[in-house]
Image (tube, rainbow, N blue to C red):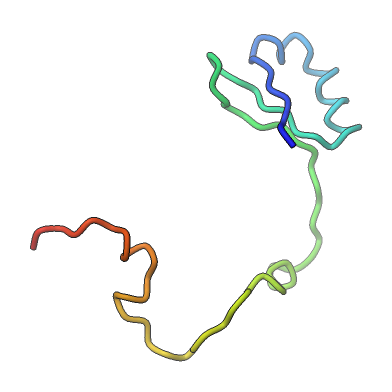
Length: 85
């Protein structure tokens, strides 16, 4: 699914029409500036759940949650360039 793209100039001229289209379809629109994506306009969706309820089910695998984490355990450190010390 690819979002529709529209220039800032076109958006300005047709803003109300585009906003109604987004409300009706639920599909976001990308507003571009000089051909590059700048802003995404999408329908607002209220989520009244508590933050912990929103996270429920998001943990895929829990391994040793109480074990200490060493430098070799962090994915970001595995691919980071080493600094000269």
